Every structure is written in structure tokens, then in C-alpha cells.
Amino acid sequence: MSTLILALAAGAVIGMALGALGGGGSVLAVPALIYLLGFSPVGATTASLVIVTLTSVTALVAHARDGNVRRRTGLLFAAAGIGPAMLGGALAGRIPAAVLTAAFAVVAGVAALRMLRSRPAAEGTVTVRPVRVAAAGGGLGAVTGVLGVGGGFLAVPALVSVLGLRMRNAVGTSLLVITVNSLAALATRAGTVEELDWAFVGPFVAAAILGAWDGKRLAAKISGHTLQRVFALVLLAVAAFMLIEAVL
Image (cartoon, rainbow, N blue to C red):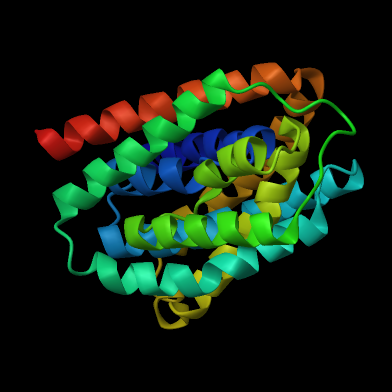
């Protein structure tokens, strides 16, 4: 019973992160599944993809209704990263786990610091350039492919800092990117989904979906600048934890 409660609590937190911040779900889900619920690393990453995909779709629908999703930008961003992500995934097998963890921490820390120093774009000033979107999406795909993460926690900083989207638009659009990337990753793991312990994954997903709706409502009540700073601080905390894990 205590494990089920942990699954519900972790799911709610991860759902709120995805709904309010548009990222961080996979970063939080994998450690929760391993350290709290006893999943193996392989099982945790597959379960995380299922959880993040379903939760992201739910949050995406809510943000799309409010006009916060730049569909063309998000689809181009996600499509540009598929090839580089596959190449990065092949390269990751040749890199020691500790090096990958440290690299993940550094990238997350840099992204967080950049967001803390940047200012949200003013409404009506965003100009989306397809070449710039494709370049940013390809770079994100390569990084996330090497580091083995869905990429939502990097997509939001990229959409804000590189493409100049306002925070709320970046949050909504990143959910589209996460959904596409997660579905693509799940397609390569279709055979392992049936092996998941659905007694815990099911409640985890249900709590995450409900949490995503709460997170979306929270995002509507908080300014974009505040959301940006909260997201950056969460990234810094994750980066510090993972860097310590890699070094010790």
C-alpha cells in the first residue's frame, strides 16, 4: 500500500511539473521509478516514456485550447531532432555512464543559468524563422539523444532563449515536442511495454494526468517571468543532484 501511495504522490508532482512548466517530467519520473518504486533502469525509462507521453498529451490539449501552442514551430522543432537523436543514441553507448550523467548535469545547469539571465520576450515581438527552429531542434535532438532524456527540460529554455517565445508559449509548444519525441522513442520499445508493472504504472499515470490539469491552472495564475525563474531553479537543483551522483 505504501508503494502505491508513493506512486500516486510522485505521479501528481510530475504531472504538475509538465502542466505548469512544460518539462521536467522525464527528469523526475526516472529517479522516482528507480528509487521509490524499485524499477530497473530499463523498465524505468520505458515506464517514464509511457507516463510522460500520456501526461504531455493531456497538458497539451489544455494549453492548445488557450492558444499557447505554436504548432508549426513545435512540429518543425521535433522533426528536426529525430535524426540527430538517433545518432546521439548510438554514440551514447560508447560513453561511460558517469560521463553521461556529468554531461547531463552541465547541460541542465547551463540552460538554467541562461534562463535566469534572459528576459521573456514581449508579446507580439516573436518572429519564427524555420531555419533557426530546425537548427535548434536538431541540436536539442543530438543532446537529448546522447543523454537519454526526452528533452522537455531543455526544449523550454531553447524555445525561450533561442527562438524568443514567451514563457507560456514555450511551455505549451514544448509539450508538443515532448509528445512527438516520446511517441518516437516508444515505437522502438513496443516489445517492453507489456512487461511493465501496471499495478503501479497505471495509478502513476492517472495521478500525473490529474496533476497536469492542476499544473496548467497554476500556470495561468503565475506570470511568465515567475514561471521562467521557477523552472530555472528546478533545473539547477536537478543539475546539482546529478553532478553529485556522477562525482561520488
